[in-house]
Image (cartoon, rainbow, N blue to C red; front, side, top):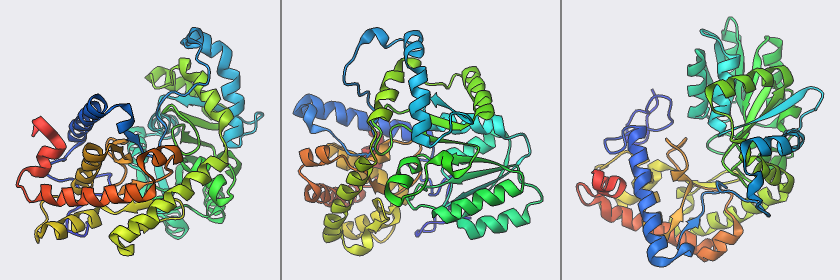
Length: 422
């Protein structure tokens, strides 16, 4: 069983340990409600411009011209389904003769439904990613009844495939939760091996559908020869809302679409106009611009915290949870950890929001896919409104000081994260 630097065992299906303050998703929801209260308070006391959406995600509704008469499931379906299909296939690199697309209420629902259709009870499923598969993948496989083995990189994947008597499905993650990417040559070999064993291939291409082609000159998702895959419409270059775009083999998508309607996880068609606008306006230049801006914040953070405290991948920067807890303990003069690293990250994110109005990606997932504080794909205009890269680095530095102060109190962190519920 994997453990963090402080000896805490990772929770089932997560890449980090749960603690006494946030032991379950229900507690994460309470934490989120506390965050909402800070947002309400700041807007009421300091104005709308006092909250800065710096999660790197686009989860609002953006339409250049809003005609409310088309914001209706039936009307929008009639007017925009063909455009969604055409633009979705173009975005994912699909061939209209062989592929189709469908829009879900979120990416997790797309993965869950694909697994429900493509995985049977007792099937052998091999996952492969640069580091580890997202919890949404693990849960989708479990929901489908599959037996899941996760692997890191091509070498481990080959070993798992060789050891398995039969493999029914391969679940590929191109860009991992930690924002490292599988090289194109490795992906090609993974696909080739999977097909040679008769396995179907599902791709969790959450951000990889754009980051792969835009930043690493990789093919679009369906150009990789996979059976089906999905991406998030709120991630990196698209403008939301938070929906899941699935594409793949026509016959498989047909079955997935039907199951989606049965399970009630399809996107509301009234949002199709926003999907069309998002796909039509997408540019890989936007992705590259946001990477450049994020890297500037990384430079300032390293000056503030030290090179060894800031982890940099080719596209994002992050503060690892173990380092956050360690830095806070050092500043507080503590020798015994008062919480697990994940809870330290949660505390830092809450202080960044409470004291500086920063909405970080930590609050975007329930539960988050990683315990790290991730700084990624920052919108240049919002960062500029906040004060620029140095101002953001300073805010994180001061929030670490605040976290140290909170940790000196026995129930301080619990009160910070859970509010009145504590």
